[in-house]
Length: 64
Image (cartoon, rainbow, N blue to C red; front, side, top):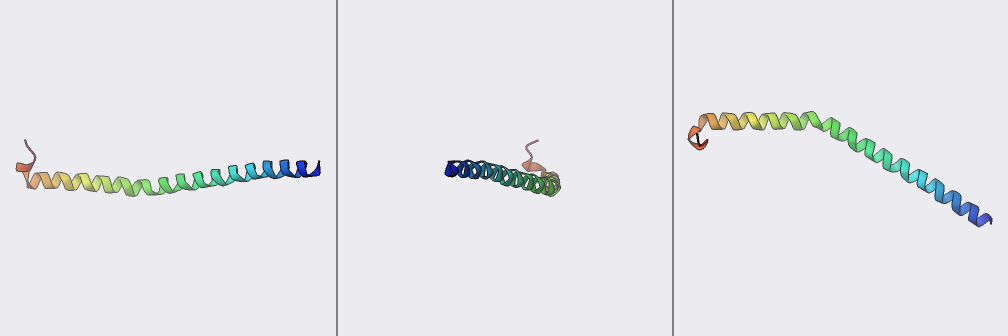
C-alpha cells in the first residue's frame, strides 16, 4: 500500500512539474517572438523600400 501511495504521489508531482516546465518554455518562446517582432518588421520595411528603389532605377524590369 505504501508503494502505491508513493507511486501516485510521484506520478502527480511529475505531471505538475512537466506542466510547469512546458508552461515556462512556452512563455519564454512567446517573449522571444515579441522581442524579435520589431526587428523582423524593420527588415520587411527595408526590403520593400529596397525593392521600390530598385524598380524606380530599373523601370524596364517592372513590366509596366
